[in-house]
Length: 569
Image (spheres, rainbow, N blue to C red):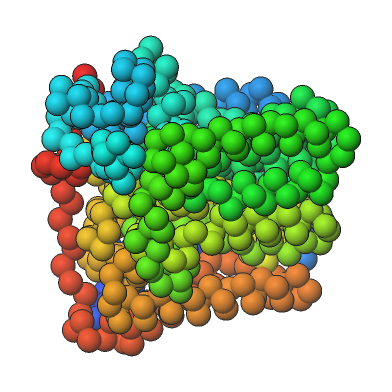
């Protein structure tokens, strides 16, 4: 237990939370600072629970010293890889089966599944007969409008999606249907968590630090794509496997496995080709002798097969033939894509997985700890991001948040693990709060599939924030960058300023104990929250006149690819 003189400091978080919730019930205060009204909804009790957890941790933890320093985590009590794998698979599969049993497929999912059906049953990708038979009724009441790309050389229609994922899913769907696909994706998520952990250990992280790499790679957004049929999760797994092998000293069989992982990326999606090129260049620079020869033999053979496939189908040996040339969607604004991928209230990474703020703040630890390997990480991250910067639909269509950033997750897990291998300072003191916030939101969004809280739809209202609102709508204080509106851009700029300030404090906290101690209190995040909300109300959204009424939560919707309630068939 704490000494008596420490009781005041231990109870301070609870005091701040109670004060904030009490202020949210005073009409005069809410009228002057409408942002206080967000505590009238579910965020109020959640904030109170967080404060109670922090208070209890301080009261019963004997690890904190007078100076506020926390010792480096001990390398004991860390679960085994086998235990972590079993835990992650059970968790993701359990959530996935619950979710998919209560909701039909959406977005691009039915198109990947119907391609898998055609490959297994007719051994082709001519989907005209599949649509005529309405094969999609096995996983959705429909109707499903075909997604066709450029026509083949003989004039027949061809699917607008790459064949890699359907080829992987075809035998699984044949054996166990949609549930089998969900279990396969959960298996991939579980393996990805272990690969992220192995990457972190190889970079020099301690076992407790590497455990956070596993946590980051298992939580949102990877969790969401552990039961949604998209190419991002298998792409992330292929990237992690190839990178982990190439940064080690592999045997020729391991080099062959890396080559298979690299070669799979273009088959999964055309946008993964730059990442495959970077990984291939890494292999040529780092491998030698039989390992390099093995890698080259596999990648050259599969590369020729890849180009030969497009030559046979379209009469041109280029994957761009699928789109009839350069995609028309390469007409976006890079600055909007960057802000949106990070901050958008529907599709952004940080609103739904705030632990990634600490991962981004930890990038200097990767450079400091890994030396030349950090250059490989940087080049690979840039290769993964470049196709997104000019993409008009950077949000990914109708899908869960942060779809296109999933392949980056194993790369960001490593600096997080390296930083948390040391005594936590600055922003690292918020690690459990950031983690808890993201996981709580994910569980809230997946608990009741029929309310469609997890699926987003361009610039239309985000259901999850409406469900959390009671007084002032929460979504008012988060930007929607899919909407080309000046007010949304101003809201994003407010958040850029707040995050920049936090990151600056975090850097100062590494050298100054006084700044570091400010991260020990709920006063700092509460002050930032209020300052940002007031700036949004009085500047960014000043022309709105006042907070609008909360958006009602939708529970069903009709036709096309818009999701609605459906029992599993």
